[in-house]
Length: 80
Image (cartoon, rainbow, N blue to C red; front, side):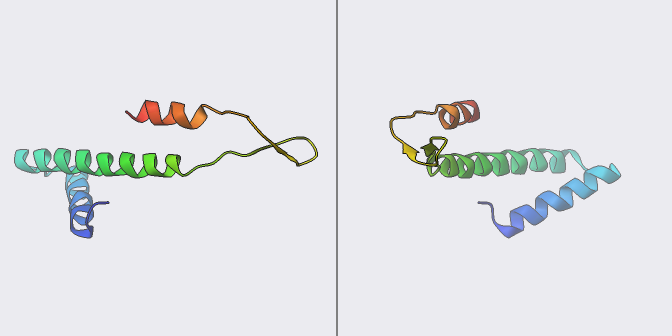
C-alpha cells in the first residue's frame, strides 16, 4: 500500500483541485499518485480474491464437493 505521506499528498492535491488552484506540475503529480494508488489497490484486491474459498452446501447444510465457481476468476480477469 502507499505510504501515509503519499496518501496525504493525494488528499492535499484533491482539495487544491476542488478550489481550482492546481498548477500544471501538480496536475501531473496528482495523476501519477492516483495511478500508483490504483495499482496498489488492484494488487491488494487480487490478493484478497486469491484467498477466497467458496464452499457449497446442499439444502440441508451439508458440504457439496466438486462445485466450481468462476466468479472469482472473472473478477480477477476484469482487473487486468
